[in-house]
Length: 334
Image 1 (tube, rainbow, N blue to C red):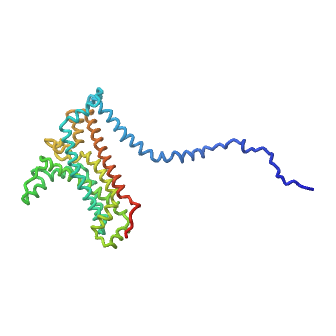
Image 2: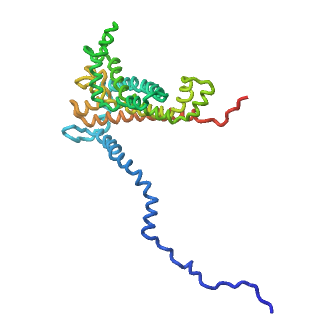
Image 3: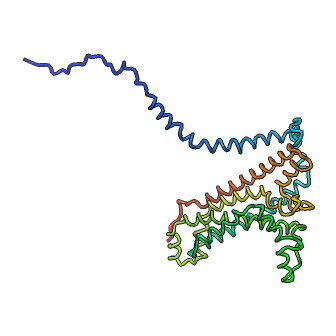
């Protein structure tokens, strides 16, 4: 008898194809929502805070700048770019812009070099490192008003300590509150006194992140401390230097406290020889004119200037980053 080896077909209905998809429970849905939504919730506080204290005031200032807006009378008619035209035609604005850039260059440029030097000293093997690092940060903790009042007395024209020291060595007294360059030097010294310690700690943190193997290799190659600083430390600090330069640029162009409190009147001198753009903005908005529209126009002009300088810094940053990137096609030494 011959038996068939043909496999039997399963003629039972396929119920899995007709089965409805299982519904997810509330807990499973909540878990999926948590995975998708929670990252956005974690970063949302920054964007919400930025929208409230950053973006909204910026847009509202733009709205105010195109209206005739009085401090007491409130909003007036729409004037378009009339406020900007008025500001750009004022000699005091251009003088304030000149003073702002002058004080910025006299403060920010030496500030970076002095901060790097002090950070390099603190990164060495010193006794009581914590004490010296806290001492460097102490001027940053002092209120700007106190710093301005103290330096205002030090740089007084008649009874200042600086002129007394200069007179003791036979140098004529300097008119710190009358000459343009002298007043800018005095104000920039206040800015440097306050911010050098802060930038020093930033550079110090970056220096401590440099691998020590690089210094050991430099020592084996016979490099001294000065050569190690310029060949190892400075190239490794390029991103930090760029960061400090950008932040110093933004803060330096918005300087207000130090020149405002350099004398008792707070007007930037009799001939406005040290009045900055932010001081001019305050004078237009809360001074004799009381014009919020023109003050908002000054604020937006300053914002555009800072934006342009920021773009220049960004292009320089990209160029430095591209120059410092390792090149793959280097020729081997023969």
